[in-house]
Image (cartoon, rainbow, N blue to C red; front, side):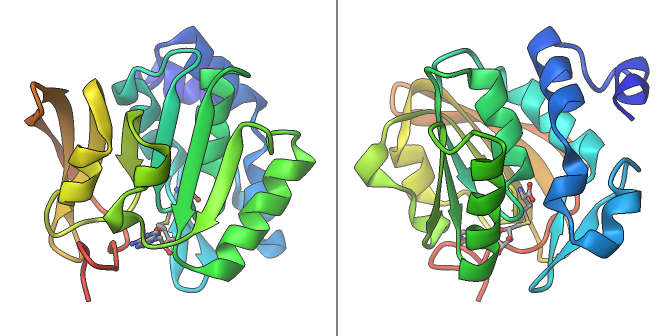
Length: 207
Ligand code: SAH
């Protein structure tokens, strides 16, 4: 699967490629779906939610331009797969905070991260990520893995000057992937094209 993503030009950065190769995606999906874990497709993870397709996860990892030691916030922790990959790329000095509104998913994600020895680097918290995480702000990178109706203003607040924000913005059923950079307190944005994520639910999300 990873060879193919490299061949297709999705994965380019050595640290990202290494992380994708090392991460056992089958441990992040429900047992009956394990055989499908290395197909490039989203899979259901329960509670009506999905783990994104590997090419989407890889694309987002590349767009984020992660560096060792970065502090990163994820909104929509889900299975914990994306957060685990980010943790590997930012290394032992880096930190990942994954906010997930569904407690049962967050608990399972935390268990997997523990088993993989990543619990020192990733913290999974049950809360509405659309309201950001001011207690641990500012973050070098923030990424949202659910579709938002607008860029949640608290996420711009919680982003470090010069930091990057990646967020799908649009309708409930399809969105534009927006890459933002915080410059002098304002977000400069560009659109990276159409994507499909489950909806962001919460104060700055859908009802
Ligand atoms: N990145 C995940 C998949 C995310 S699926 C992975 O690697 O597996 C999107 C997740 O966003 C779902 O689990 C959903 O419950 C969560 N979500 C939706 N709205 C949210 C909010 N306001 N705060 C936190 N999590 C939210």
